[in-house]
Amino acid sequence: DGRTGTFVIGNDRFPASVLDLPCVVESYKTYDDSALVKTADVGQMILVRESGEASPDVVEYRHGLTPPMRDARKRRFRREPDLNPELVQRVEKDLVNIMSGGTVENLDILDTNFSIVSLVIIFGNCW
Image 1 (cartoon, rainbow, N blue to C red):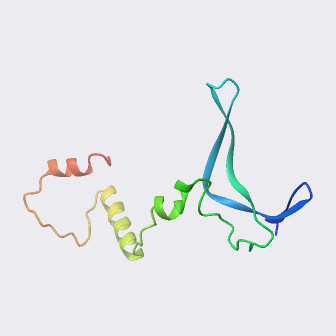
Image 2 (cartoon, rainbow, N blue to C red; image 1 turned 90 degrees about the vertical axis):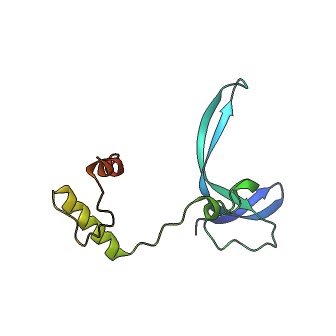
Image 3 (tube, rainbow, N blue to C red; image 1 turned 180 degrees about the vertical axis):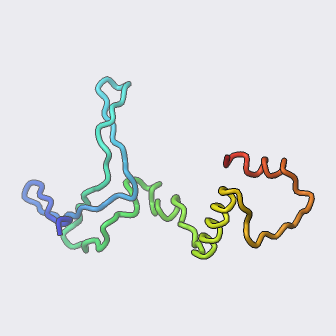
């Protein structure tokens, strides 16, 4: 499969697997102990096991290289929100209507004292 092999050191042989890391890790090198030079972006690692251990059945190693990266994707990256497709289509249609100079359909006005200054404050960053 291109992801399993054997690691040989001296006369010893160990099973090995190539696994993807949960995020890209940058590696640096220094020549004078003060300036760092970026040498590579590391996205995969070779996992060498004892001969009796089972082979991992996943392609991605989810724990990263160091203990603080344990379950990094689950803890640090936000899950995509569940969106209702009908709501997205309705909002998109209303936005196109507003941009073309029209009005929003099925608009419920809760505050009749709502002024144009309030609209500028709300939508000021969008325009």
